[in-house]
Image (cartoon, rainbow, N blue to C red; front, side, top):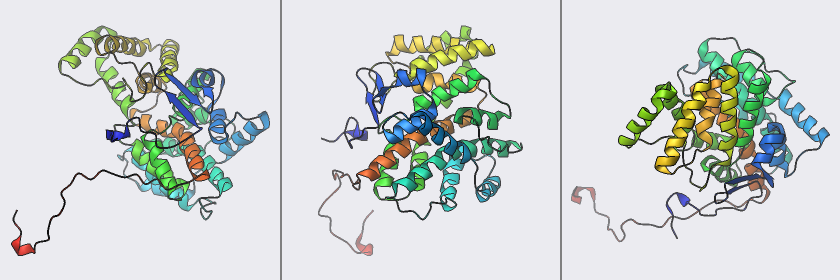
Amino acid sequence: MIKAGLEDIVAAESAICDVNGKEGRLIYQGYDIHDLAEHSTFEEVIYLLWNGRLPLKEELAELNKQLQTNRKLAPEVVAIMKELPHDANPMEVLRTAVSLMSMYDPDDAAGSKDRAANVRKAIRLTAQLPTIIAYWDCIRGGRPLLPPKEDNSIASNFLYMLTGKAPDELSTKSLDIALILHADHELNASTFAARVAAATETDIHSATVAAIGTLKGPLHGGANQEVIKMLLNIGDASKADAYLKQMFANHEKVMGFGHRVYKTEDPRAFHLRQMSESLGKKLGQEKWFEISKIVEDHVKKDKGLNANVDFYSASVYYMLGIPIDLFTPIFAISRMAGWAAHVLEQLGNNRLIRPRAEYTGKTNLKYASIDQRKG
């Protein structure tokens, strides 16, 4: 049976993530996302995705140490980043920087089947993606580059490098939970691209470049950027009803709603909705949550669609002071954990991914010399 976009086609067995669309559940290595979002940290989730279990205290301490001490970029990579056009798409910069990083990685010569080397590479990639994004925002804005700290979490360090200020507890916790929620989502487009690349036994940097290039596409990443643009255009809760009615009348798509797999509410939206409300109250920016809630209620009532992970993440990131065009790169910061987990799993029991296509073209055509051909 052929299904466009491979919808509902099972392409691999995996123990990493289960997306239960009927029940609206998301499971990482056996743990419900609600349990992890409430009690865990992003670093714990990284360990879980890569190792199939939650870490012991000393194991988490070692992973934290490795992530903290591998945040610096090779000077050569930074030098090249400074030469890139300052109006470049941040995802293009991220894709380019990751490709460059492979040439300066100390395990570059290791074969793709060397799991220990791949884990070390995965640690460096996970640690360095936030540095790339923060540095790029500083480079294009003409601000000095802050060296990454080596004594805090990925979420805290990224906000510090981006803003130049130590973030408060709520901001750090909000970003940390957002990273947990985005860490993996089974065979989404970018993860599948990473597994296809890894199946050729290429290096993990190349698989990551494939994933980043795929995430850059607006049908995969970028929806929350469109959501915040809509919220900014609405501007005030009193204008939301009229704005939505006009969108519906024009048959415009409201971004941040519906999902290919989930038939009920996206479980990740539950936590992001709470974060949006909490951040709004703390920062005196309640209107972004208020507008979002009106939009959500309208789309649910009129279109029967539920909010997905992109809808409330838009207002959360905006209130954290994150530039709009960095929303998708932040997705990559989080999803790097999942990409690495799938690359490691693919290489652990590898078979080249080579599907078939049903041919629908012409047959039995005969070659004609060029002077005998007709247009």
